Amino acid sequence: MFGLNKKDSTLLLIVAGLVLLAPFLLNPFPEGSAMAQFNAGYPDLMQRFVIFGIFAIGFNILFGLTGYLSFGHAAFLGVGSYAAMWMFKLFGMNVLPALALSILMSGLFAVVIGYVSLRRSGIYFSILTLAFAMMSYALAYSVLAADMDGPDQQGLLQKGLTGGETGLQLTLDDPRILGQQTAGDGNLPVPSLFGLEMRSASELNVGDWVFTFSAGYYFSAIVMLLSFYLSIRIFRSPFGLVLRSIKSNQQRLSYTGMNPKPYMLAAFVISGMYAGLAGGLMAAMDPLAGPERMFWTASGEVVLMTILGGVGTLIGPVLGAGAIKYMENILSKINSDILHSWFAFLPDGLEDFVVTLIYPFIGKGWHLTLGIIFMLVVIFLPGGLVEGGQRIARAMRRKKQTASDDDTKAKQPAE
Image (cartoon, rainbow, N blue to C red):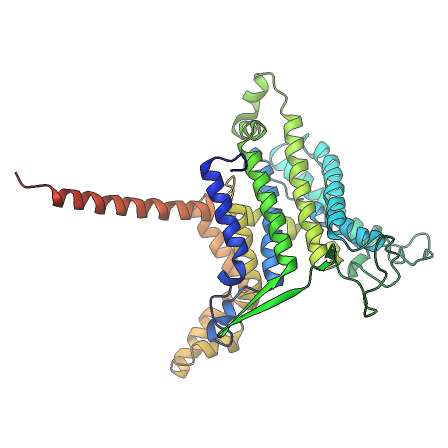
């Protein structure tokens, strides 16, 4: 199917099913129940799942296939966001041209950074990419935010190209040559796909459950599935095999007469374009681009996502992105009052002790939980969540095979 083997086709169909049914799967608890705190089926969070999934998929093409660890991929995420915002400000609110410009600009930026950074390998490559990302952050935060020539006629450059600390935002003064200046109610227009607004949503009430279906989420989900399909084709292609050989033994590959540099640069640019696409989608779902998307912590986050899910695997980065974004948005919201309501059935002294014991790991301390999980994964599951799933599947198959062998022996007649 679609040029994929049976195993990859099955994996693609599983991911597509999970993504399309996410509004149901991520809302397992009825509204108003004590466990509704763990529901994650609202549009903003589901969009983050798939957008950061795209970001991690692209990063995995570089890190998972070539072994080159970049600490500066957030630079391409930021470039993609700024490019999409300028497309919205100048040429209309259609998301397709904005995403196209995001991919193009991040790709060109990746060519420049990759050409310089790939002259070194190992930790030196990682430090170079980190330096470029932090320079990009400084440019967006202050240098390109300064209005050096005074306000232009439209007021577009009153805060420079990037908007500085407050970020680049839409205004009523934006010309939008190919789109509406304002919405029908006089407010700012919103990103749309040929008239379908990304923020539009509908709800389905089934008993005590409320399921929300967002146009923005499903558009992002379709883009993620296309990105996932393309990553499968890259992994299974001759180009992907060359990248694997670079990771395995770059020096031996050079002895065969093949120059690995163009392949490495191509992988770096493709990975950067994935990041730019994710940045453009972030701007399309929430029309704002700020320098914080280029900060080193954003680059570190995608590294954690990929390692947590499984480096070099197809679905691992998507799982890692979902796990981290779930903890960031769900565990961080749990406070002491919620904990007290959960353990109210305990005696007062024991209730306070349990809450005191758990509280450092949730709310503002969710990073501590993430750190512990990451440590356990690195020590016991080097292959990430994917390896954990594979171990469980093998254990179940062995158990099933053992039971089948026992049944066979029981049916054999005694001699």
